[in-house]
Length: 205
Ligand code: ZN
Image 1 (cartoon, rainbow, N blue to C red):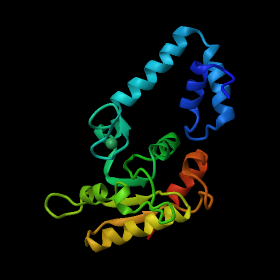
Image 2 (image 1 turned 135 degrees about the vertical axis):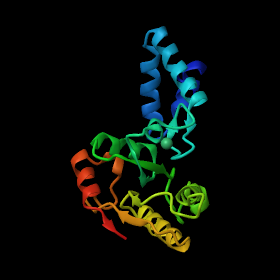
Image 3 (image 1 turned 45 degrees about the horizontal axis):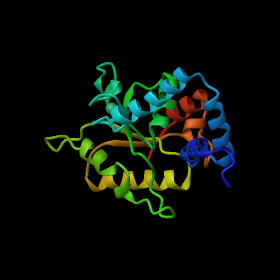
Image 4 (image 1 turned 180 degrees about the horizontal axis):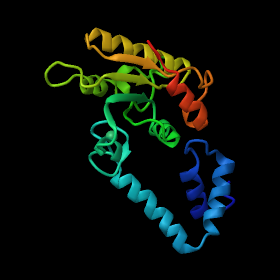
């Protein structure tokens, strides 16, 4: 039954199914939007379309960015011989908030999960391996810090990356962030102090 009329129902339907947005939240958001000034709604709509149209993946680290290279990969102040591997751009943002990491990143966009049918080819692993191999067969970095989540998927992914690096015979130090991040916990929801401790206390795999 269509209680609200087709325009509002269409908006609710469009919002429903976004991550964390169920029917009730979608209704709440829709009614909020309808009560917003028209210019604000237009600005929101423009921002959505603009972000979707203009966001790219950085060609080095695969985080989301406006340009070919993200500001971190472009920066000469960052240590390009140290690469931290994270699952999502949100994890990258969490580590940037600590202000204590001056290396660069590699964003996998997920983790290996046999249960969800996500294999090594579904995440940006091939790109990582290509990146680690310098043009002259020498390793392109000194250290890979694996900062995937402390979940089953995150641990599986960490072990897989270590295996790949060793199979390639690359002489790169591979470290794993310390278990300051709660087991099963998400990096993006972990506070800065804990993240910094996890980074400082990282151990060689
Ligand atoms: Zn980048």
